[in-house]
Length: 508
Image (tube, rainbow, N blue to C red):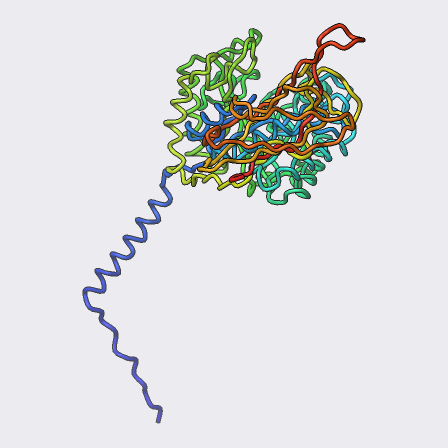
């Protein structure tokens, strides 16, 4: 006889169960709907592209709520003669950016005369890739941990940026490769950014369509040699929301096409950084059709930022070209956020309002580090003052000027404190009484000492009264002195001397 085992009686839930169950699913569906339809904008970092950067421009960048600056470190200025490096200007820029809590992105291009026979009015790749590799490595070694990213070259799809030769994507990838390897060997944490391509529809010896150039870069293996795609989405007088336009005016939306090419090549996980963006109120006469008004310049910049935030979450940095003091006949002056007097144009206020504060964007303010020692001039940086061209171990006259009578170096003090400091410098062959070293315009006592003619470096120390220092920007100035005419030369000449390794130490 088969035993029958009945099923358990059906479970009848309490009515409250149905209420809770329904409420849960309603909440779940609502959250899904809100996340799918969310219009919360992305928050890219915001940069200003400086040209001849100084302390005032760094202050303006900070006050305008930029969190980053982009600056060219011109190869021809840092290494004008092979293996002879002039670091003083770059050192000051790095120190200033750190003091104001600004990340620094550096573009490395502009060949020196010794690296290529191409005229310096153009931007030419070096004859030997190893020369560029060495330059990039030395920069990245010197500023390891202090520079966020390096941009390798500039707009190589234009002949004027490629030595006057037709653009060559494969050759550019070779340059990227040595630049990438040099950066990663010297500072593995630093990012490498591909050169921003110029938006153009040209297909001739003078320029190559940026979309075609990027595809050819990928075919040549470029994906292995950059962490971030750099971009220059200029729209040449058109509003950012304009549709794709005629052959002379690529639209702002061209950037989305470049992004699609990245996806075609399986590279969509990499971010895009806009390393130049802007509209000009004063173009060169031959480009009069790209001119915008002051109001349009302001409106277009904020409109572009809104489009990026709403529609392009893959853009992680936006750089305004440029924050500079326009000069006479300056081809870039019309793009600047400042006018010829240095006063802000309407675009600066509009950008600042649209950007919001760094705190609102989640950018933590950098806190200046405490200082017990301040390096003003490096051990390997030599300043030669005077009017005589001399053989090594003499360095070229400062700034290439003859005579070169004075040098001023900038440095930043977080907090001067209450006790005096000690200034130390190394001096070579100062022979005449009256040469001075001053802090913020006040000479330190006594004057620089006289030396013999043995070309030895002498360590010189002077008390630097704390009342001469101020929180923030400070200057140290060295000045040479005039010599009386000697028996063989019936004219006045200037005393030649060299200095290096200037530092301040607290409480000495």
